[in-house]
Image 1 (cartoon, rainbow, N blue to C red):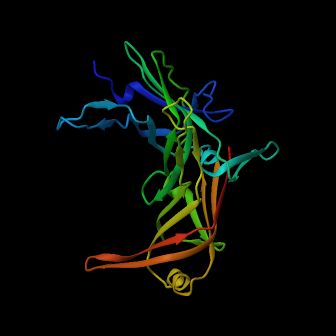
Image 2: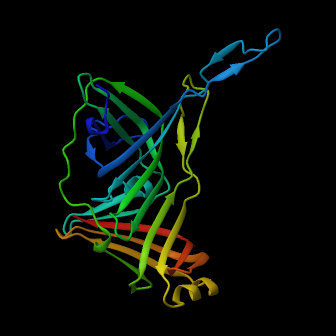
Length: 293
């Protein structure tokens, strides 16, 4: 019988140091919609005199990358996108903040069947994390990662599911400079670490290090166009702060704060049968987040 998505799982675990496989990479990510890993041998073909065909083919470097998309129940993976987290035992609030060096993690993906097939991606770092809140939809996140290596196995274990509800659009609010915005249709924040895999002459065909580049944030907001408040911020190049907050019925709260924002582009779309929609893209200086379980 063919393996199917309902026979599979994806989990993760934090590594104690880069490339040291997590002892128990069994943490729940969220309600996973897709997992798309890619493994490459980057084959090198060598040509020489006397033949129009290549004479030899040999593995060049082994590279591993992938993405996972999920419905958000918590924001634990923000630690790996921003760099660090602290937990206040009294309040139960976890704070995610920027750090220059990102922690690494192990992703474990398995098919469970008559014979299990497990792939564990070791030495992963988060290249991008995109958080999307859209009208009439669930809050989603997509993580793209680069890994140092992959290990395979034949014994998988289904994770223990988090039964708390995912966040829905109607549980969220968007504030700009402390003022709640009533007509936001979509909010999207992309965190990009611009990672680069570094190779060395060290007897290995996988990356020796995964190096962080410049940190970049991209914020997109779509509004039902009713006034010129956001247009004026764009026109004048005015700096502003944006807060996205979700509160679940069970009391869980997540807050993502983007500071030092400036609108880069503004578009107001007109159609003869539609209401006007204003789409703006902003650069962001800094991002932090909190989660209360």
